[in-house]
View 1 (tube, one colour):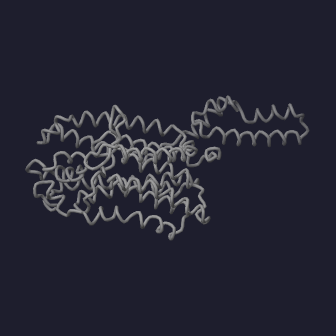
View 2 (cartoon, one colour; view 1 turned 180 degrees about the vertical axis):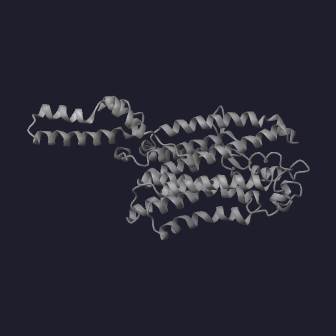
View 3 (cartoon, helix red, strand yellow; view 1 turned 135 degrees about the vertical axis):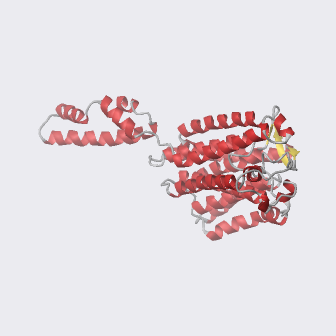
Length: 408
């Protein structure tokens, strides 16, 4: 068995193969002994029937190659390539000299390559081992969020945590960490138990309330929707979901819609309206007013006005197809932990995408919602690529036996 498994690169299937072949050998041995062979002769005959471990190992290695979910990774790579091309255009061909000096393309190339490497590393890791760290991750989130609120240095209203050599926007990371924490905590939660129901509501509410005090509206809203998704998938009733999320959603909803500025989009592009955009080609005749944001929050609008509606529709379709693929994968997952992780990440990407679109179309004035895989920035690109690697890891192991030890 050990010699055989050494020839199979996908370690996730080793236990299954040992169990399956062990049972088969036992059946062959017992059949041979019923025919009058001694135990030693029966063992030799069973092993001979199985064949040479080199040949069998080669066959099983080919059969059990770790699958890479092409339907998930292709849209991600395509949108990332579009984002990189936009950064190239902004650095070398746009009229915004301030962005030329930032070397957007060169820095983005480093971020994307580093993100791709992290994605492949996470893809190789067994996501199920994360489950046992769910409670420490949750406690760490509350601790760091509290330190950010109390000691953070505010930049554009958002507190950044000073760690000595760098300032970290922990609010941007929080929704992704909450998905990992909540998936492990709630994968087998009994919402029918009154005590558990109140405890679960408290566990969900505390980080959202902390986020609400930071002024990071996008991160708060994303975390709120993640909580709704987690409760729904973990079999909480509609009444329980509403009882927890409705009170928590009042402030984010007010900031999302009541404070929205319908003139945000035209004012960004010197009087341009959606009707001024071409189907293909640039409609920008002057330098955009918000030069500090065309490569971040308003990159979708910049793509629309610089390359036309066709490019914007392609980007929209690619990201939408990626999100739909993630949701489909989550719905078909057998194991609750993997299903919660997948749906939680799908919710994170979906809300981030929708908030950015609403902001670009002037429906919402909520800042800080980056366009997934496109907006300039090292931290969010790395986070998103790690999340995709986690999704690929989940898909890779969708048919393997769930590790019960991971939840102990």
